[in-house]
Image (cartoon, rainbow, N blue to C red; front, side, top):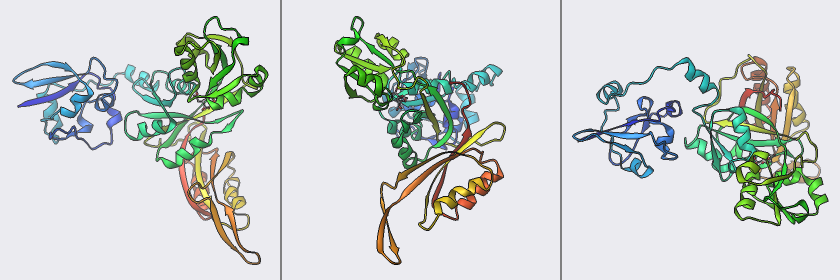
Length: 398
Ligand SMILES: O=C(O)C(=O)C[C@]1(C(=O)O)C=C[C@@H](O)C=C1
């Protein structure tokens, strides 16, 4: 009989916290996740650290690297109800936390953060601003980043929500509602768009410019002046990567200076955006909400819909002003699944109105009674209300 133990990258046990059982399949018994030193990295079978290994105990003892395929074949022969016995028998004892662990953990040293794009994207910069020591995980689409958090492949996702030049990013507002993640923080990032091209290529030779549609829109004036064709791609760094990997001599990319360096492009012009002070605000999303405090300025984001009637939106917003709560942002989005509301008018027959969802950010923490009272009051008019998150405001310099 063979027993198995995982050793090595055991630093994200917190990532498994809350999961009762982790069944490794293969007909084996499930293992109590809270007691199991497997890292999420390991369990997901992605980017497996070379140090991670399986120790085969019993008749034979060998150290072998873990592969994703092996995860499927693993048979656990451990009594899930007796983690202490398991630790003792298999010679694994958890290492006590040191003060150093706490410092590095506050910088996100064992946090995996998903973002949309490839390395060098502004969203990756935002993730690194929030968690300077985190491991960033590129995702093809924003939707994938949401799912990666839901499926425990990563701990958090960072997604753009609005830009000072382009306004709200509607797609990500909609995604917030399609998924059940919580906003646990925000990051404001100064976005400096650079025009870049292959080494040796001159500005006059550039006939087309590739970038994320938001980035192209933020550089509208200068690109119009250049008279180039604009080509949309999934992200700014992806544009730089595409120009470099295809050795394009007639194309440029709009991306960050970091992307130019990563993909070996020359920066032709910096500050391509229409106004030099260009800020994008990103949300940090997680599976669990944070416990809001009152120790620093907090913001709460909610989304609601309202019944029809005279002045309902006015009444809904008054619940905040009545309690001296400042509104920071309001955004309305049509109800995508049920766009029109049919209302019986007394004198004019039936009318069909657009029906909206209202996304509101207000300046208070859910730990404050005035915020709780405002939302109970709002519930009197709302047909639907969801708190998306209550989190510290980003007041840092951009
Ligand atoms: O393409 C990128 O680099 C991104 O991170 C996306 C994105 C966005 O969607 O708004 C982020 C910041 C800038 O506003 C431009 C693009």
